[in-house]
Image (cartoon, rainbow, N blue to C red):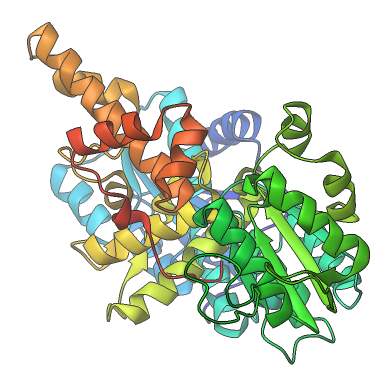
Length: 483
């Protein structure tokens, strides 16, 4: 009997095969499982019949008795594992011994149940097995896709939300339209800008990127528009501005919301007249620049507050590209997780490292305030620190003393229940603060000013908290990498 094809995860209802030589037990289990597990059920009255069913069907879960006349449950288990290791097998018996249970688990059974068993319990076990098999098959399918996947323009994912964004980028890339890229921190706004540039006729020239919040107002103006010798104290020679450097190319104004109003006025002239005026010069210089701007802030709110010019917003907002958050593309999380796992295990010489399916399921349940960048950092840390050859949920949660915030509050409180109240309270506050600060800095990629603005604290107050808990911003700054 040949191995079953490693097809992708099944569509529609999953399938449970129940094997028992007692007709009453078969039909009772069929009624219970079909009704409560939302799956299809097929029956076999012997081990040999079960093998015949496996030739034409591909069950997700097999529930089998151990004592059968022609082929017992342990022999059937070995056959199933040799055919398809993703099938979850539950062994049941009315004559169970500890030795038998241990042997079944060693041979790859998921669980060992002794008759008579509680119906609710077997339903819970089967439900968990259905989810386990789905994850195993998804992982196998994703791993196969990774081998020949060519990420579209640097992106990884197939979700409808991402596909819509990529389709829009493809439509507007080879135009001169000004584009405003909006999205939360960590969603890949710079990657989208690079895709716009790389798909345009300007791709032969280097795209120029300006990190607007990183430059003070006076320096930002001179960097953007350039200056002449003697324009101000220290201007010992002419300097070419970034707009001129981006002539016939693309300029990305990253985090445009942080540009001061005085610079906004000059930027508006560039967009309207397609010309710049370096500091200290009376003449203007024509430039052919495609402007792309990005922001994670609410520009309409900043307009209402008088911090951003409405006319500049309308000039920038010719076409808006909205980058979806990771919460909007959860179906891409397993693919992204394996993509980053492959990247970092090569980078850090851990070729045999794999990811446990339950760890992938854990990732899919998270909220991801830092989006793809946060997921990327988490996978990198797990690759660096995982003690075994399989990344598990524990590797994402971190050690107890690190308090990374991945454990639920109930789990944390149970661990502290034996401490005096004040000590327990102090420890909970510490764990919350460390987890909050780490996620905050991960979302801003180590930018303390942006993190302070996001959480509503003064920069100095945030820095005091960081010092108190031994957290440095440099740990969250990484080289720019495509997501």
